[in-house]
Length: 282
Image 1 (tube, helix red, strand yellow):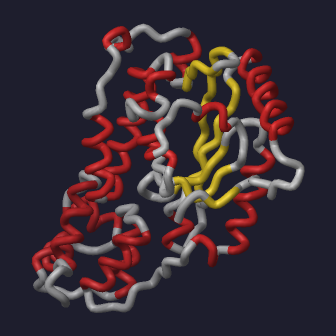
Image 2 (cartoon, rainbow, N blue to C red; image 1 turned 180 degrees about the horizontal axis):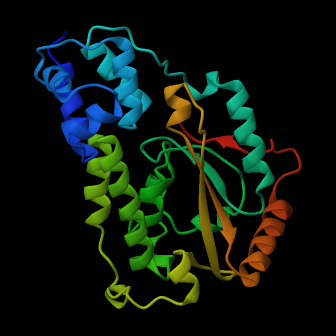
Image 3 (tube, helix red, strand yellow; image 1 turned 120 degrees about the vertical axis):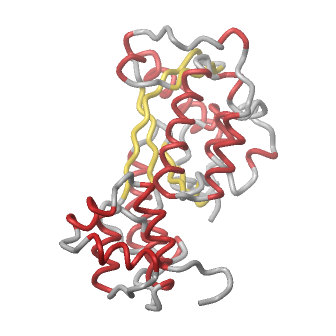
């Protein structure tokens, strides 16, 4: 074990406590005894690979952290981490999904909310964002919530930031990722416009799901978002990717999206390389 690697028992106890389970709860679920689980956590007993896999499954430990558990117990890691360009079949599948979603925005983000793939829909949504925020790797959370990004044009900013913070907080709780914890602190410190300080009054749509209400030069667009993940991924990179797709929340947004797409197509040079599902960052 190297100097930076923590003991298996310490990691196991942290994941158990993070999932708010007692030793008895976890032992029963794992068909083990509380005494044996206690010995694993204190280092008095060493786990088998099968026991590690069983405990990790019960605790819903992400693949990256399952490798850490295996390494801490002296086993080789079980899951590989492939660069996105090496995931040809998955990348092609995501490309098709992103392209089919036009004229509405869709993009794929990694575990830190960096955009790794996107379609070419509606670049007009990002008008007014500073060049610094648009440089790869583009971070979707920063781009939307930073005062120099889309934030000034999000008409329900307080509600949207509240939703985004709740998503980040849940991810920090689930993954225990220091980078995500830092991003959560950063986003939480962004100022909320004074006229949006009270987000308690939602219209009918917002009671069901928080929309992204965005002012554009075409009018106010309102989108609802969905998130898709690979449910059977055995590669770390693939397991940590999420597809974010924005859908129009009303007929007005449908018309705005079509007008934006028409403008984009009319201004695109005929010799330009298609930008569908382009790689934004890695």
